[in-house]
Image (spheres, rainbow, N blue to C red):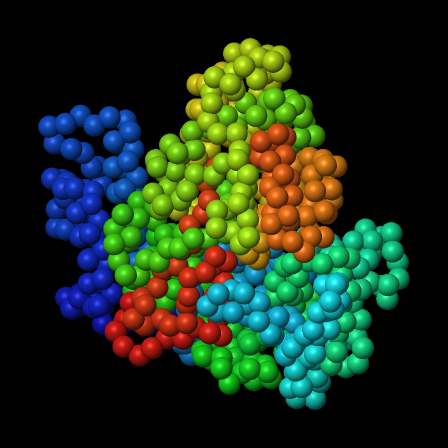
Length: 598
């Protein structure tokens, strides 16, 4: 990605990128402290403190810090070894995290998927760049019936797949039914269960799709009938699963439709190319209804998971934005947090553990509570995260709209030991060996691994339990969760919309994202009753009662901490990014000004 430089490099003047890297190293040294064994401005390969015998912890921290710095240097130097030419440079380059699993709106689940899907495909509504609240998208307007159960959407007149092919109400109906079709196997099909007969069609109980409550009244009018009033329905209409996809192309190519070129899209960008482990290039869609306001003509999204590589690309001006906290080296957080490029904000994201309640002894609520009560969450956050993440005692993040979360179990090792003894395992005796599963993500200083080691020690010290740590590549880890092939597993959930339902709905008995095997009829009934309510205070009370069952009474999950929203970019150069609870930043609203480099 870097431009080739002429000459052999000997005696070359320091370029802006080498100056920036040198500045970062100086800042790093200032935080880390002096090292007498440094020579010629580079750290020794064997760091030690003169006159002081470091503890094992100090030694590990120093070694980790120097490894990180060396990794940054290597990441800086490697791109200079070879160059490619001939391809025009993008207007905007974004570090997007790992390669997406898919760009199909019905199948995408990860943030790295959904961000790009949102640029390619649009729904009846879209997210406001500033507030992330739903605003008109493909639909220019809509009306709601007095009872809140029927929505009538009016499509814009200038919607096109191609100059000769309009986007119609029939395409909307097809897209929603496709997401619901059990053959599609959409993990987010539940987003459409609020539509009349949506759940029955997805389960296979209903075979006739015309009985589902989404209909095309004419080419530009869509009528949606809901089971009951749904406070967040318009938020769902802006979510990627409900985006409109090209029916004719899918019917022609089947599962391979995303490989078709050209690939018509309903959003502000077209997919120019997707090179695995290299980049996804998006180009402005000239047929998009609001193309006049798409700020960047070409956007590159880079699949970078190594924090040192991500930061180097940013420092050298090869990338303009880093979206995720996991793509920033944890060891440099103290330095980077002082910069104007570092942006944090409240965010709807939870880090928690799932318990496989289908496996003994985790089918015993006393065991699950004992595990939860021995986790010193504040210690975990302060020792490893250092980004201002709040400790979580409940699943729904503080600040979620129209909601005050429930109280969880807290920290009480003595009570945990009593519960474990009641379950038949006094002092941990007789408790079977079990495993804790986490993914092998490299971001944020391998934070999942560090937390896993600390949890292992807490459970050993407080309860006498022996825990095996299992690390898996992300795809394998996700598959293991889906088929309940684990004992305990680290998990995260990022809110899809600003409502407690986006978190609590996960643990309904029939939700495909439940992944715990836990079923509770009372919980399901409370969720149903809550989402029929028009009175927001009554609805909040019912949801709080459901969350109490989830995090305190039954504990199939163990909340650990809440995420803090994070973006890394130069505000003097990058415009159109606004902090919001969903960390939602439509690509067509972002642009780069002329001026100094990052």
